[in-house]
Image (cartoon, rainbow, N blue to C red):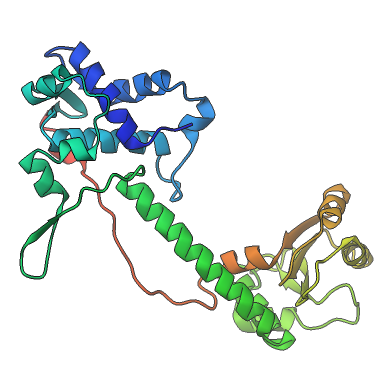
Length: 302
């Protein structure tokens, strides 16, 4: 289990103390903390929700940032840290834990953690979260996305079958299928075959086709519906198909699709909502935040 970033502070300080006046590279802190907390390779590879950084490494970095801000560590170069006299003094008290509450006794740390009020006064933040700031932001993003997906799923269940088909066409075009919206609209016209709702080009040159079945259902899609779809694909000598529904697929349906020779993608209501968010269908941009970090190369004077 990956430890909270505050749990890392004391062992980080002990490692820095063991080096005396020698500096310790960030990578050594990361590797030694992973050993101390007996993390598995899977633990170390776990990424933040953004997928841009290891969750464990992010926590080690934030622990180091807070310790430097409190003056217990000092930066001695790119990715290098060394214990300070203050750090030695704190460890001399044999603390059971080093966390944000302990660090809050230092003025420079309170300034780092403070936020300005409307009248210019400072309100000191002394809460002790387990997650790093980036993790907190990631989790809030996930929560907002999940809420939006749930709202989209509800709206999809309320829309008419014709409007649902329009949504499917719009999404497929945004995903790069079918060329223009007009071309895709013509391509996904209703067919005489009950197992196929339409056909759309996989690429703008029309070198391959994808057969589409879109079902606005309240009930789960089961194996019988997938068998009909596969039969229709076989009749059209098709190789690829997409079955889209506003509900979900039974375990039997999923198992059946894995056994057939055709390549069939199953998109349930939840996945459909996620794709609509990713490709901007039925949603609009509310806010944009840029998260920036230090460009270490910029400050490399070598």
